[in-house]
Length: 315
Image (cartoon, rainbow, N blue to C red; front, side):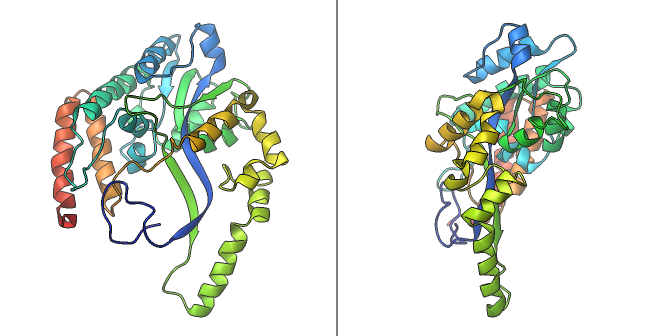
């Protein structure tokens, strides 16, 4: 939902419905239970603990952490970095659209993220996409933890393509001083406003069918379009039976708590410039990882660029 004109933080949910969701994903922490047992480790619940755990897992030819690291807007918006950045209390703009990237909470976390990625990820991390992270983690190589979309469980728990079936545990991403944040994404169906009235009617009938309870149950249970957006599908016996197998049901617990506690949210400022700014942000974070600049320097420079881009939206 958006009214097409309101720009700023926490402005989603205003105005008309543009699309109807049919599946979704949120960011979770997945980890190798066998490696944790081998090295006597426990699941981290804070970001400093995660950094320490990842370092302890980076040994014997293995790496402690894998996620997306490429210079793409989604690397920032829906991934481990944003989970930690906003959990620490960081932000992008204030209510007046002034940039606040370089405030202390965001700087502190960005330094931690830089160290995590620099010291515990495999070579080539800065070009790693979400597809790479998904594939690497299920390859059987020793990657201790992965912070990525929960929809990847369909690959990781598939015996036909995955080498880590039965070896994975699932948890929330760590919280921070400002609580928890879990990146959230939905796939939706919308109708083009430029089509004829006759076609609009037919399109709306299609949308109702494609997002209906019977069809979404079939899509989830038979064709693995997952996770579902309907409660009736999530609690259907066939879907429960499929997902209860994953880490003895712990994934279902993580998913339920993520939704019930509202860890999933859209923390960044709603604007048509989101992808442009997030790609500049990804570039800034890469510079921190490579130790070309400090987090303070990178985020301050980012703020100046972002301010120029957003100037036209200020009242």
